[in-house]
Length: 228
Image (cartoon, rainbow, N blue to C red; front, top):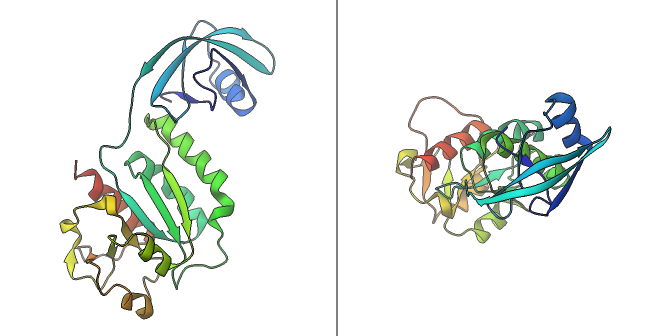
């Protein structure tokens, strides 16, 4: 773990309790003399604390140093991702975070599972991203938003490209992923949705294999990481 997350990192004194306390002192058995690094995932700074007091259920730390140490994505990949089974999203988020995706806009496509409510899982998604950032060293939090449907996603991001099996351009030609790239659910986009793509650049992967929706998300993240 590259650092620990604490929302109050940067304050002169930190109180460590709950899950973080259990991780640091019960699981990792952190020695008293060790200096601990923290981030708040807001200001790109690393804060270093010495341990002043370790009790049965909490620890008291005091700041000894801070450094401006940004570890943010060098590219600005933005995924517009049709809603799929949330368990699949949860498994994929850490990889997208480590690969430097800056933003994900979830939306309901025609073939999305309508019983899935990702906005109700925002807290869990954020926790997954925090854990991933602690592991990989990323100093900012990925932005997550939720849009109503495909049409709203297209209106909100008028320059976003589209990944689709019926695309006419190779995915290798994707350039500006900061403008957004749209990924469909399992089953792809419906004929009605494809009518909305008339003025869009439609891309397809240049290999014979059919990817899952989460596989396509990881592919696009990989394309973005190569545009540095």
